[in-house]
Image (cartoon, rainbow, N blue to C red; front, side, top):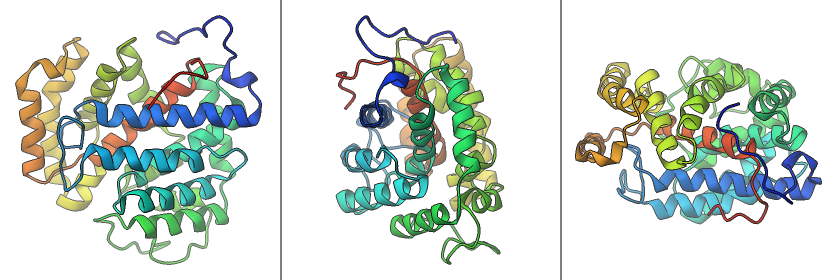
Length: 306
């Protein structure tokens, strides 16, 4: 795939590494993706440049550091990765900073452990489909416990398999029931189609500039999909308005512009926060995209990601 880098001389591809070293590779890739999440401005979201919603970048960095070990633990199931990572992040920050990130990244890291980076994104997605197909009731119970710990706002009640009750189906089946109202749940049903088919091409189009890639991916998501976090808290009409606002930035990013060069981009960020609008689902999807890019591009094991 265009934009993928070749491993430097003397560096082993991730797929040739033993399980503990592959888990470490995944941990570093996760931290790298989470670092990008706050290093660049993504309007409406918390970044180093702009706090918001009662949180600062340091909360997200602390949560990522706490979650990185559990979510990449060698041999752990998806549900276990989710529960232990969310509990660790909550203990570090006492706020919900990364539930969506963990729900997306745990299956990806399990797939990476299964297949490694050989074959690029296509092979990783094949392994992901195997992981998703194998999710069971224990995975669902662990994920539900994690959601209870994080206690995200705006969930409401569901007529079946509500997260406030013990599940009676596997995690993928439970996510399928929520897919119509939650874009993270939708990924479980569709083998992370938004990540691989919409987000990753946008990210890789900014080859050599991951910050710009992250911003380009973000505006692709915000302009192309109603952000389900905004929909849950403010309704579909508001989410559609945010999509319209994002459209010009998507066009400009596709044209190669550096969005941060325009002060209006920062102004849009502040305007969204003033209206308490947080495209949080879009931001979570961006982290998953950055993780896929890191897992499928050879990186030196000694590289510092965070």
